[in-house]
Length: 73
Image 1: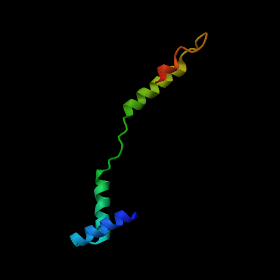
Image 2: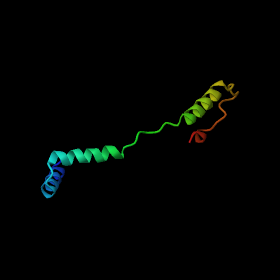
Image 3: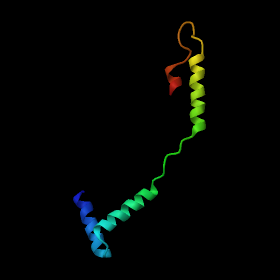
Image 4: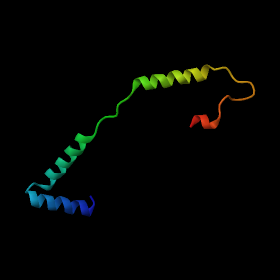
């Protein structure tokens, strides 16, 4: 642990009368409470899969590709 954080925890423990480990537990609980699981948008992935399948089944273009590099961005 960084010395600065250790000093802060010691100061908070002394001011509040709570043990250092309890302060650390509370900080972890607060942090975990703010974390949310990422949401997966299945409809978006299905649309992407359909787009890829359409690209894969397109016939080859005579004379080269039918897109420009800028189209990818």
